[in-house]
Structures are given as structure tokens and as C-alpha cells.
Image: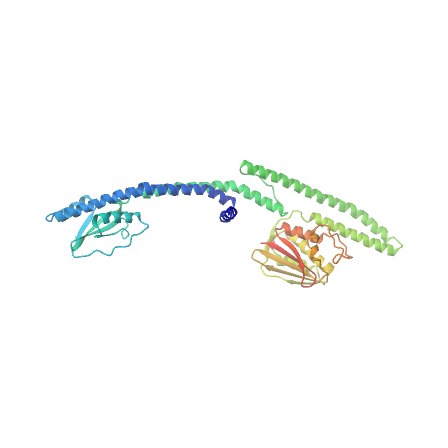
Length: 438
């Protein structure tokens, strides 16, 4: 039960640090304001309202008794009350009281006035607190008519309530605004660090990163920057080392080709030449695998145009495309091109026909590449994504290569925050399904 309750609170609480911190700051302020407001209304406002209402009703009752017991000076009594008690009193003859309105539950002033009038005049009264903004109308039945009395609301409603509400609300809002500004400044370095880590994790180039914020955040950002620089140096060293190896190996390979061209035994020269060409292809795959994470800026590119440019290079090959409209996406175009080329080359190496189609979902763009080759056993789907893994059976038989095509494609797609999966193709070959987020 506790686990379920914990999950419930996790589901309703905000997910972002800024809003969680704001909730921690704002919730006590709001709770304190509510408690103070309730205490004020219960202990001060309501009690003051009751006392003022009781006093006002007592004045009206006194007027009513004096009027009833002094038949000769009734007009004088009404004039004196109008002058000295902020009342506007008139006597309406031969008129009856309106129907009594239902008490408004949300008005403490109405309830207090109704309670005091009922104890003094029974059911022989009627009042209206809503028609006029600053004035209350009261009618007291007398014989065949009624007294119509207008008096200001201030006589029964303490004016300090509005001032209190203003002073309790404005400081609270001011404190929350200050907290918002403060928390924005505190969480901005964390957001900046998270974005830099995400960008670096996707293989994108991160410009000079400057730690900022509180001491602990600066320390984390500083360590991240050191780690980023060490990894970048390592990757650069690897690329430089393999570039040097490429240069060193190409020279003896070229000499071997020249020597083979001078051999009289052409059969032997041909076989050795094929081995040398395979060595060059393998070397090129190694270099491509090591260099596909080179620094490249992310751009907003129309994926359809990029796919069309890639397909144009395969003149004379059976490649069919079916592309949805409006496929713009943030990506590193050269990396995506390299990925598509690897997958199409892979399909054409083992089959004669390749279909490329794209479709858009709610949050992703899907790229599907089908071929009519021999396919891959389902048990090998995960293994072929590993670098240098080759299948001796089915695909890969009697084919040159070192097993890096799918591994490079997988790394490129994952570095873009996407995913790549393998399925059986409707063409009875292999289907490669790529999902890229917008």
C-alpha cells in the first residue's frame, strides 16, 4: 500500500527540478497564508462582524421601540436618526415585505445579520446586501407597512478585511516571484550541464563549456568538462593513429600491386591482387568505423532530399523509394548519409532489390530499408550489431568485409537519440527499421 501511495505522489508531482524546488518554496508560503487567513477571519473578522451587527440591530430596534411608543414625534425621531446615525429611514404605508431570499452560504455577513435580526424581530424583516455596492437595504414590518432603512455596509463589515487581504497576498506573491527568479538562476547551470552532456553523448561537437552556478554544480560541470576533454583527446588520438596506419599500409600495398603487375604468373598475380584489394576494403572499413564520430554540427535537414541524394549514386540498381512529405529533422547530415549508404550497400551486396520508405509518427520519423537477400536468422539480430562480427552462414558467405556496416549504422542512429532494429522483410530478406526523434 505504501508503495502504491508513493507511486501516486510521484505521478502527480512535477518532474522538473525547477518546479519541484518552486513547490518546496511556494507550498509553505501558501499554507501559512491560508492558516493566517483562517485564523484572522475566525478570531477577528467574524467576531468583529458579529459585534458590529449586534450593535447596528440594537440601534434599529431602539428606533423601532421609540417610534412605536411616541405617536406624536415620529417624524422628528426619523429625522434625528437620519442625521446622527448614518441611516436613511422612510416609512412605507400599505406595502408588504418581499419574499425572503435564501441565505447565501458563502456570505458570513448575511448569516450574521440574519441571525441578529431574527432574534430581535422574528420573521418580520427583509434585507438585501447585494443590490447596492456600499449600502444595505433593510425593511422592518410595522402594522400595515414597513420601515425602509438604508445604512452603509461599514456598519456591520470591518473595513480592515480588505487591507488585511491585500497585505497578506502581496508579500506572498512578492516572495514567490523572488523565489522564481532565484530558482531560475540556480537551475539554469544544471539545465546547461544536462544539455551539454546530452549533446556530447550523442556525438555532437560541444563548444567550450564554462561551469557556473553554485559550488557543487560548478564542481560537477568542471569534472564533466575534464571528462569530455579526455574522451575527445582519446578519440582524436585513435583517429590519428588509424590515419597513420592507413598511410603506412597503403604504401606497401601499392608496391605489392606494382610487383604483381610485373609477375609472369598471371593466375597467381590475379589471386594475390584480389587479396590485396580485400585488404584495402577492410582497411577502409576500419577507418570509416573510427572516423564516423568526427565533429559535425547538427542541422535541420529535409530527410527526403537527403535520401534522394543517396539513391542517385546507385544508378542502374533496383532501388524503390516511397517517402512521406514534410520530413524535416535535426541531424548530422554526413553521418546519416553514411548510415544509409552502409545499409543500402549491405542490401545490394546480398540481394538485387532494395526498397526505402519513410513515414512519420507522433514523435518519430521511421525509415525502413528492405532487401530481397537471404536474410539473417532471428537469433543473430543482436550479434550483427557488434563490431567485427560476421555470420559464416546465410548472409556473409563468400562476401568480403569485416562486419562493420551494421555496427556503424547502429552507432550513428543511437548517437542521434534514435533506435535501429532488424526484422524479416516482406521481400524475404532483411528489414532494417530506423526510428529518429523529431
